[in-house]
Length: 131
Image (cartoon, rainbow, N blue to C red; front, side, top):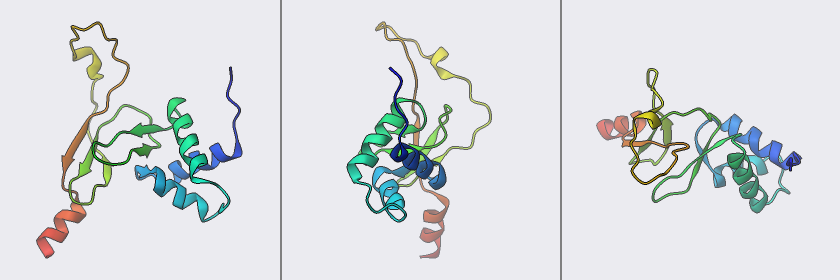
C-alpha cells in the first residue's frame, strides 16, 4: 500500500534537510513551530519515524541520548562529541561497504550499519585550550 504524502511530512522532511546538523526530534520540532505553531510534537515524532522507515532520512540511535536525524541517507560514519554531545559526519575517503567483511555465524542477513566514533569536536577543543 502506498503511503499518502502529507503536508506535515513535507514540513518535517524540509526541516531535517534545512537543519543539516543531525538534529534531535525536539530540535526539529522547535524549528518547525517557529513557522507552524499549530503542529504537535506527536505529529513531528510520528513523521520522523515514517520518513526514517521509508529511507527519506536516516535515524541515528545515540547510546544514552536521543536519536538524531540525518538528511544524508548514504552509508557513512559519525562522531559524537563527548563534551557537547553534537553529532558530526566523519570525513573519509571512499569507505568500502563493510558488510562484505563481516562474518556472521548466526544466520543473520546484514542490512545496514551505523558506526559511531566518539571524540572532542573542534569547538570544545578550542574552549578547553582557551579556558
